[in-house]
Length: 339
Ligand code: DP6
Image (cartoon, rainbow, N blue to C red; front, side, top):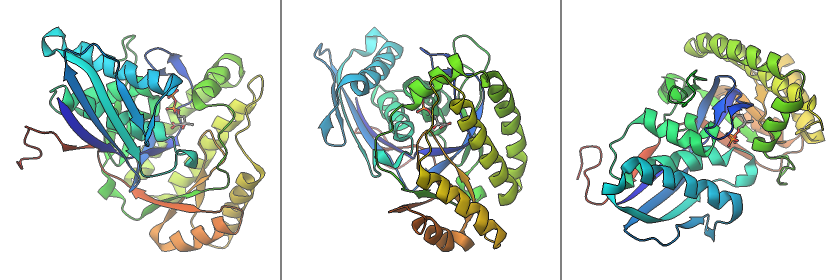
């Protein structure tokens, strides 16, 4: 009734922005991301037997409160329900730790809910099942559905009302493109004013461009897959940039407008364009925050890091395509064939 699991965050190359069902976290469109190694969140879940006491939730050394706590408790309750009364799963103790700052703007919730889903299911005695884990992780945070499997993952929109066809699916393993680099430029460490969850809700409700965004993103997912297959950095970079601009344009058109860019974000974006004219293969993407993520290759990695620093970033986080979420330990069970 105890297990520890680990998962990497991911960065979307074609973004998820907007839900068609808020409760089940079902998106309006498919999205596609690459998993970010070596960053990771490690989570231990232990279910106690027949205890009616409240769940104990500790995140990065602190007892979780408010919405953060509610979201974890809801996911644990889903696992208790799926396991059924016979399993007698009582209150849980969950301890989670990430090795990267939440303020990096790297949707830490993706890695956190993926690690939680894998650890909680394993602790409850379920066998590994990436699809079920992805659907469960999705209920915590949409982007977490893309952090169960490593490499390049598409989160299929799905059509069903119950969401059972809306999960992350690995298209290419991390080993498919080991030279790819994702560099996060830390231009700001401030908490963002509007969280992704609220920002996307407001965009769906008030941006006149929203229907066009959803339709176009679905098409871009199909297009980018061909280029990832060929490891064509230029084509992948161009789609990722365009898609990021379109997401932000749609959010800017919300009422009130949502602007996640800071002056330093634009400075780095401009520098990318200039660097390309100098023959450096670099493109940007941007989530709902000010820190751009630059896509480049191993060959240009150090030049690109230098470029980010010289345009206002005080730190650069270097990432490579990462692997699957894993169960690290499960007392009483053989893991990966070894005792
Ligand atoms: C801009 O997955 O954090 O990073 O489902 O409400 O928890 P919720 O949102 P979340 O949103 C991520 C938005 C994004 C784009 C992406 O990762 O696809």
